[in-house]
Image (cartoon, rainbow, N blue to C red):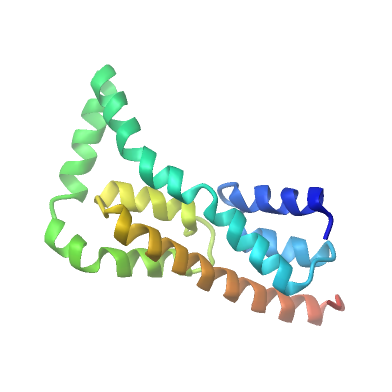
Length: 156
């Protein structure tokens, strides 16, 4: 495995909208084994998760303190999303896992981090839910890619 090419796969998996779900099939077509593509895809996809989960709240607080537009927006947003706090505490991580685990556009780790922030799901619940959801989505994507690529004549 070429280090530069592996770094490229890792970085592509860290990009929103690409994430592991598009990176894994591309890596397999590029010559990576399904196992290598799976591991690189998950690793790259998880790179931005910790910074996003830790920084979205402080950044929104900072913006709210400096610009009235942001303060109004976040007050409006949180009044609608965090008012069901007891249900969110109970079911939020399970819903977050389910949301991230579905390998469809707009349902990956980046969107999961945004949802955790918006609904106020704490890091200790959000991170494992997003990590497990990413693994499930990557597994589904890898298996689907192998089936589709095998049908199209690609051999791994």
